[in-house]
Length: 131
Image (cartoon, rainbow, N blue to C red; front, side):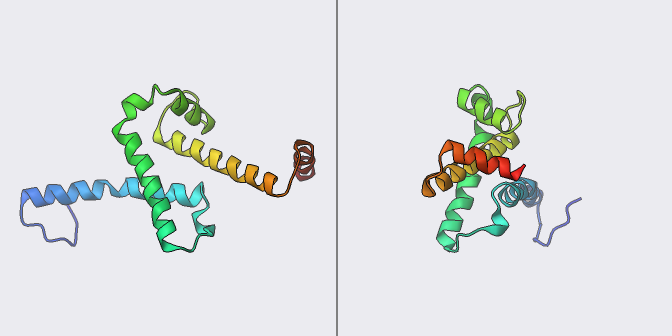
């Protein structure tokens, strides 16, 4: 049974609508990743074009992984990124995106340290104060 507000007057149209709705969970997964891992709700970018480009990039990564998953599971960088994302030997989009999120956080922290001229010792001291 298909529940939709679209006009469905053939089996072909019903199948088309069904396939469109199957993609919804993938789209929801990308938005969950954007909100949970990349802080989408605290997004500082206000330029609509920049936001569209970021979303497009996330979808591109997801689609690329989906299409080339068999090849990518043997790629050494993909394996490392998935391991960073907590994959423990599993090479999946989920662990790849988690690994990318950690890399993004690392790069933001590295940028912060450079901007504030923090040395490795000062960084360690900063970490000790948070314990």
